[in-house]
Length: 344
Ligand SMILES: [Zn+2]
Image (cartoon, rainbow, N blue to C red):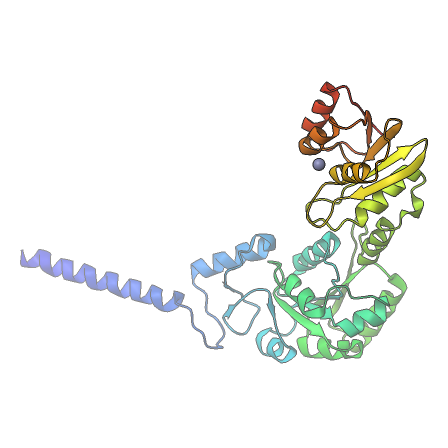
């Protein structure tokens, strides 16, 4: 019996020592010592290196930073980066990231694949204004930085105050590589040459996207979308113009009343979300307009509520511009001998 007790004490003591040693190695230390990794951490780092896109957003332990625990994607300062990131490890990218789009996302992903940590230098509002011109940036620097910092493979975000300070940033961050996007190539090639001369150890890498998407092309598209001059058909143009002026939050919908090709009445959903069709019926009644030879043009087929009003009116011809998917109103109108057709 005594022998068994002695053996049990011996085994328990051994187990205690083993677990204590394990806790000692694995427990996180918040000091700035060179980290020692246990097997579990090493495996975690290797997985993170291999599949940088799969890294979770919880604090991870990286071998390339001086401090042991890093919260990913943080907006930081140059001096903080200097303290935290080991020289010759970081991948650096810069840009405006105005109206963040999928092209930006792919650029950051490709850059992070070259190595972590990924440091993103965001151009300040002043820099974007000088580079891109009047009206830019559309989104302010702090919001742009917050958007970029939310991406899981972005480790640090900085706001570049002056374009002339870029070399100063390179001097302090000491990145291993610098990623350039393949646009504005003449300027970028010149910059790459300059950087190579001053910082020969920095690798300058050019990446390109299969499909070029730029904020400038998006803003041009927005400008075009509010320019109705390109619409050649008079009725289509009128319906779009009216709809764009609608103050409704539920739907930008318009309708017009046409007699012998002449527009005689118009309406759009109002701020109380009253529908264009019911509003046009109201003004027909109020102004005592004879509608026997009139056609009603609407942006989308009338809803059930408006259709119920329309079947009581003398209007017997309705044209809609786009199908909507809810045909309840359309069916009711047709059942009541109202001609409803798509306008082309
Ligand atoms: Zn309606």
